[in-house]
Image 1 (cartoon, one colour):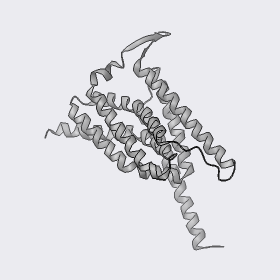
Image 2 (cartoon, rainbow, N blue to C red; image 1 turned 90 degrees about the vertical axis):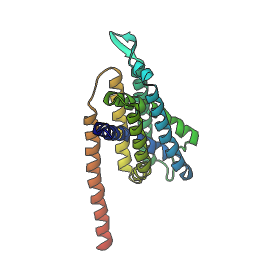
Image 3 (cartoon, rainbow, N blue to C red; image 1 turned 90 degrees about the horizontal axis):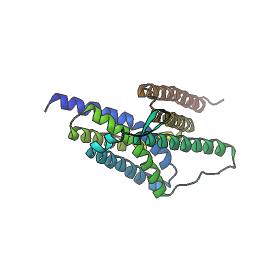
Image 4 (tube, helix red, strand yellow; image 1 turned 45 degrees about the vertical axis):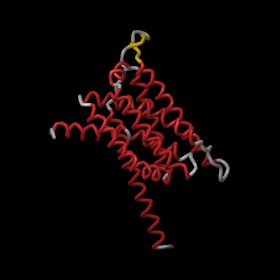
Length: 240
């Protein structure tokens, strides 16, 4: 009943949802490669896996905090396990997103009816879990820095994942229906990848800048979509 506990829970939940946006975007792009009848199950498995992973990391907070302990030095810069994980995750995100962009662009100019490769269910889950590890570490470290109570941190993770489960399908369907939005999402993931690489060498970029750029771009694209929709409606109502 302590108001401070509720304030901490609300703040952490919002932060967990915000930090999970890039996770949802990546999940939506991977799930789109699956057959239609497997997509909902993949979303549930992916987000449930993310929740279990974050809860497990929270339960082993002392081990998570040791990830920031320097392992060795390179040109006078200390390198920790967290740095190596962020570096690998950033490179994977850039590679994966670049391949998706290449496939989208080439698909538009390739043979008619050509389709990209379809993932197996297990491959999709593995890819989702690999990125969950990267996003979970930063999420857990953020939670530890904002609260001293394990129950509050775990409750925030569970609530945020439930919210993401509710929104993941809608976001995924919207991204898949609009190719320009999908391209923006892929570009955003490349930006996140570069950010992870910079963080691995201790160059910190405020997350607010990245999310502002994303929401601003999405806002502009939303206006374009609304404009296109009105033009189509005008043509239907007033054909030449």
